[in-house]
Image (cartoon, rainbow over all chains, first blue to last red; front, side, top):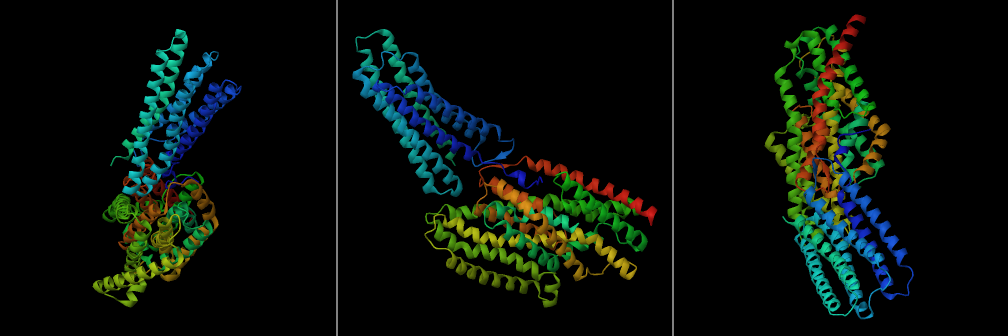
Length: 222
Length: 391
C-alpha cells in the first residue's frame, strides 16, 4: 500500500553521514596501524592494512553514493542540500587522502623512512588521526543539535570545530618541521622528493578534516 | 465503504504516533477503532448533512425513485473507486471520491443546474485551505515548543512545566467541538460564551491533572526525558486525531446511505431530517472494522518507514491535523485527513524540525485531487445509467 502520507518520509541523510563518519574513523585506525607498521620496518602486515583501508574506502563510497542518490528534489531538511553534499565531500576526501598516503608509500617501499625522521612521522600520523575521532563525535553532537536547537548544544559543536582547527594547525607545524629536516639532509634526491610528498599527503588529511569542520559550521549558522 | 475508510485513512491519524514510537501497533488499532466510533457518533452529523444535501440541491431528490438510484450509485461508485485505488496503491482521498460521486449522480439526474456550485466551491476551497491551515498550526506549534522547551537548559523541567499548556490546548478544542452543535451539546444547550468558559475551565483542569499523571509516570533521571513527556502527550493527541477523523470521515460512508434510508422509511427526502444515531454508529463501527482488519498491516509499514519523526514533532503534526479536521467538520466541510496530516508534516518541515521530508509528494497528491473527483463522478454516472435500466 502506497500512502501519500508515508511517502513524505524518507530516510534521513544524517543517518548516512553518521555511518560514513564511523567508516572514516574505522579507516583511520587501519591507516595508523599501516603507518606504524611501515615505520617499524620489521612488520610485514603493511599490505594487509592497506587492503583494509581500501575495502573500508569502497564501503564508505557506497554510503556516499546512497546518500546522494536518495534525496529527491524538493526534500526539506534542517540544512541546505548542497551544504550537506559539500560536507560529505570533505568527509569523504579524508578517506581518499588516507588511501593516497598508503598508495604513495607502496610505490617506493624499500629505503623506508629514515631513522632520524621516524619519530616525527609517528607524531604527524597521531596528529592527523586524533581529529578524525573528534570529527565523528562532531557529527553525533550536530545531529543532537538539529533535534533540539539548543544554544548549549550548538556551542558544543562549535567547540569541537575549533578543536579541529587547532589540530590542523598542530599537524601543519609538524609537517613543516619534517620538510625542513629533510631538505637539510644530505640524501638521495629521490628520497627527498618521496619523503616531502609523503609529509604533504599526510598533512592533507588534517586539512580535509578541518574543511569538514568548516562546512559543519556553515550548516550550523542560523 | 466505511471499511475502506478504516483501512485506508487510519494511517493518517495514527501514523505519526506509531512512527514516533509513542504507541504500539496493537494499541493504535484499538484506540483508533474506539475513538473513530465516538467521533462519528457524537460529532459526525454535520459533514453527513453537507454530503447528503449540500452539494446536490434537494429539489432533484424530491423524486424518491431517482434519489434512491442516485444515492445508491454514488455510494457504489465511491466504494468501487476507493477499492480500485487501494488495489492499485493510488493515493486517493475517500472524501473526494464521495463528493465526486455525488456530483456525477447530480449531473446525470438533473443536469448541471442541480449542483449547488456555491457549496461545492466552499468544499473545494476547504481542500486547499485545510492543508495550509494545518501547516500554519504545526509550524507555530513547533516553534513554540522549540522556544519554550527544547532550546532551554533544563529541557525536562521545562517540558513538564509547559505540559499543562499543551494538554490543555488539545482538550480545549475537543471540548469546544463537543459542546457546539453536537447532539450532546444541543441537549446541554449552552451558549457560546458559556461553552468557552466551560471548555477553558475543564481544559485547565485536565491540563494540570495531566501534568500530575506525567509526574507520576516519569522519573526525572530518564536519559531522554523531554521526548518521553511528549510521548505520553502524543498518546493523547493521537486519540484526538482519531476522534476528529471519525467525525469527518463517517460522513463519506453514511451520507448517501442516509439518503437511501430516508427514502425507504418515509418515501421522500425532507430537507431537515436529522441523520439517525444508529446510522452514524453503523458507519463508525464499519470504520472500526476496517481498522481492526486492515489497520495492522498499514501500521506495520508506517512503523518501519517513518524513522525521522520524534515525539515532539509527532505531537505538532497530530495536533495540527486534528484541529484542522475538527474545525472543518464543525463547519460541515468534508476535508481529507490525509491532507491535514500532510500539511502538518510540512509545517514542521518548514520549521526545519525533521531531518528529511520529501515535499515533492505534495504535487503528486494535488494531481490525485484533480483526478479523483471527475473519475468518481464518471463512475457514478455510469452506474446511475445502469441502475436506471435495471430498476
